[in-house]
Length: 132
Image (cartoon, rainbow, N blue to C red; front, side, top):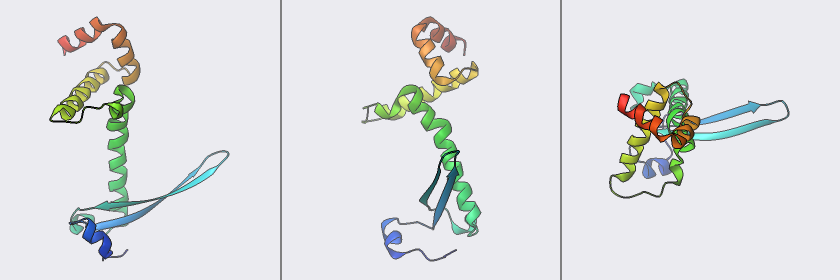
């Protein structure tokens, strides 16, 4: 593992402490694929211990958040298509979506079918909010 960052990266990302190359291989019944990505971090080096496995763990943790929250919000509420971009409105809408997902998960339902069911039976959605 290299300990000195290339100058062009250091100049473009102040505070950058580490970069890693992650190569992913995927084998399916009829095909194989290979993907190479690069990850960067500004975490202090003592936290990373210059350990490649620590960087891989950080990358996996990031995608776990992406897959369990942001992807679910986009699939359920079409968040990426939302054109609200100014003031605090985007953050407020994100919090409303998070609260809605929490309520739906408490019912034991999957988010997208529950949203569709609540859209058809609004009184059920109101009751869920009132009893929570």
